[in-house]
Image (cartoon, rainbow, N blue to C red; front, side, top):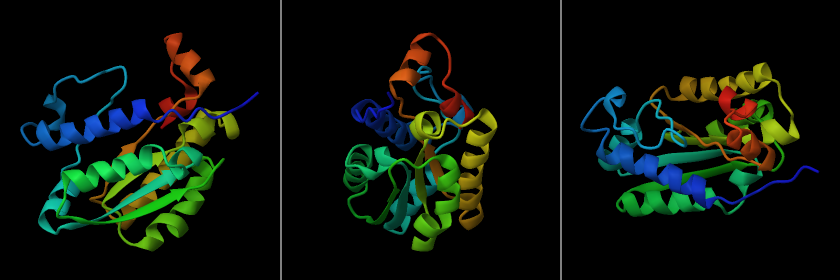
Amino acid sequence: MKFHTHGARPTVDFVLLLLFLSNTYVTAAPPQNLPAVSEKHIQLRGNYLNSKHLFESTKSGHVAFLGGSITEMNGYRPMVMEFLKKTFPDTSFQFTNAGISSTCSNTGAFRTNRDVLSQGPVDLFFVEFAVNDDQDAGHSEAAAIRGMEGIIAQIRRHNPSADIVMVHFVNPSMLETIQNKQKPLSSSSH
């Protein structure tokens, strides 16, 4: 039996910690010199200085969320939105919720232009398809990579300075894989 587990708090805490770190440590050192935070749950691939600078200097920003039901629901997305509003109280945000239940990264690649980029240039982009690529689509590694690369390439073409956060929630079978010290195919492909 396949089912979603939508306990958003651990991932939201992770995303908020990541954003907090980007506001404190990243400005002091290049990404490769960042202190180890939690190698089990966070993989820093860069920083969020572009959107931070934009939010502070222009007092405006477009933040978009693309994913399946985890994104569509009132879980991590509203918490991140509230965090950004509190962190940048003078900034006027445009938030785009492009979450649609049971969609995978391949579908997301086809939806990116219509559901996200049509709303204007994206400054900070959150994308999550790990669970749906695993349980709904059952994607191979190549398909999961292709779908996510298609999304990221479109965001980068539209705004090369956009900051991107890849969020990886897990379902029970993915959690079991992690507990067995292995990497789930979908999230490791993203």
